[in-house]
Amino acid sequence: MGDLKIEQTFSDAQKARFSSHLLSDLEALKVLLQKGKIEKGITRIGAEQEFCLIDKLGRPSAKALEILELINDDHFTSELALYNLEINLDPVEFKGNALAKMLSQLNSLLDLAREKAKKFNEDILLTGILPSITKRELEDEYMTPLPRYRALNERFKQLKRGDFSLFLTGVDELSIQHESVLFEACNTSFQLHYQIDPDDFRASYNWAQAISGPCLAVACNSPLLLGRELWAETRIGLFQQSIDSRPSTYALKEQLARVTFGHAWADGDVIDYFKNEIANYRVILGKEIQGDSLKAVKNGEVPKLEALNLHNGTIYRWNRPCYGASKGVAHLRIENRYLPAGPSTLDELANLAFWAGLMHGRPKKYDNIHESMNFSDAKANFINAARVGKRAQMCWMGSDVRVEDLILDELLPVAKIGLEKAGIDAKDIEKLLGIISSRVYGSTGSEWMIKNYRALKPGNRTDHAILDLVKNIQFFQGQGIPIHQWPEASPINGLGSTPKVVAHKMSTLLFTVNKSDSAEMATQIMKWKNIHHVPVEDETGQLCGLLTWTHLNNIASLDAGAMVDELMVHEIFVTHPQTPLAEAKDLMEKHRIGCLPVVERGHLVGIITDKDF
Image 1 (tube, rainbow, N blue to C red):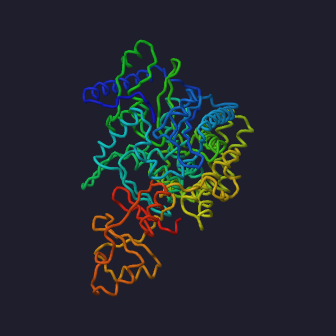
Image 2 (image 1 turned 120 degrees about the vertical axis):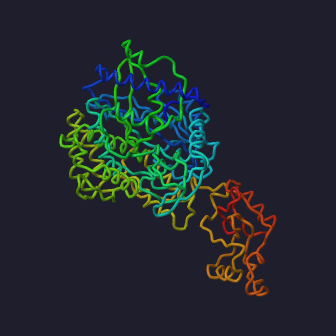
Image 3 (image 1 turned 180 degrees about the vertical axis):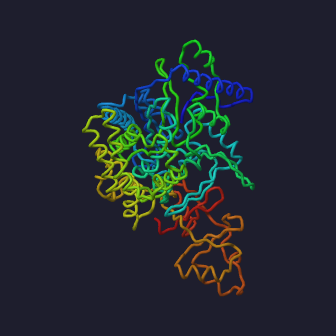
């Protein structure tokens, strides 16, 4: 989530000072470019690994800060939620055993995190979206208590002027409102960095945009959210909507999203790019900055450009140009932000090899890709990949093609040329690109997950099936094998899936009636569908009563035009999703009732009956 040292409160005067530093940084970058002070002729790669923390049952943990303290390693940092952490790998020169070196460091650091997590009887998991996240883990108490996250949340709420709305459709549908940016915390990614020459900015960045669709299609690993089957890579839609700062209006007006693929090919150099970003996106976070970057450059120094980097970090492009400075040397790089975490570290390094190989092996004919490919085609390819993964049909250089054919026939050969050009070890090229090829013929993470989730669901509660799925992912991930070699998931026979609260057992697909509905019709439907308990709602959607099987005997005593309100029980007992199951059971036994409607903030979200026990 970027720079942690920001101001939680940000006055107009502070904003003005920060904006002045932002403009100074832009001028400083311009001088660095003019003087040839941006590094050229060398390529480095890097990566950021976000991962989930889970308890022994496979549910989200809340121990991130405690585990982070125990790890005590500068490669690790916090994330938005208390069930996520991030690893920053050391950048390496793109040659020889660079990929093997990165894999070794990644596995070593993950082993360290796993070792420390076990001190709390917890574990780690690599997955684009943790399937076992529930609405409970999206409440404020799960937000990491650091100023940046609180400030980011408050600022986006101010800009939004209301709650955040999520609407995603796939096989299932998710429609919900939320009062914070914590839905963003569901996303965990494997972000890649590729250093570029400043003179090659436009060609490199536009090529990165063009290959995003096929690279994502073969790497999808995030199909489930809150028990719903949504997109092959649900992170893409979820991230945009979860921190969408645009207020809803009755007017039809163009508003730029802060999470975006973009709207046109890059034109000009990196200065033109950043000018466009500053013009289009207002400053939303800031901090007090000491010194003046422009003066520093004129004195022969290489500044960090803190204001520019902070502002750039609040614009979430899926391919994001970045400036960096280390040991007195400045560089430019492209950050790939769309690839998910998991399914295994081998899969992640294969994704890195494929993408970096494509970046390094760009055919000369694509140096001016804007002349041969429509930008809208590149954007549509990306969205189609996020929605349906490998099944996507893409438009490549004006021709329609299946994404599998595009990868196998054109892009894998280009990636191989790029890796060979960089001097990457031949055995690593064969191994990692072989994983990509096998995934095209076999399964991506999303395909494996959906197939096995559906197999685990029959005769099983959704919560149990999800936890079984998580435990299987955890096991196969620990074997260190890529996704195309994973066998089918197996039921865990209750291990780790013991329900503890009402949310783990309640039914959520409900039949309800309105208090003004026909009582005769409501009771007939109860008979047809063999439903013993029907919640009753009023015109505002609030729970106001209950129809039960015993009411069927009373319908004959009512007039033909009687409404549900005349028949229902008005005084009812309810429970909450986080109520312990034992407490809910005791309440039902004490009052000799067969069900409890489950209510959250006045709204019916489920029902639990004596049959559930």
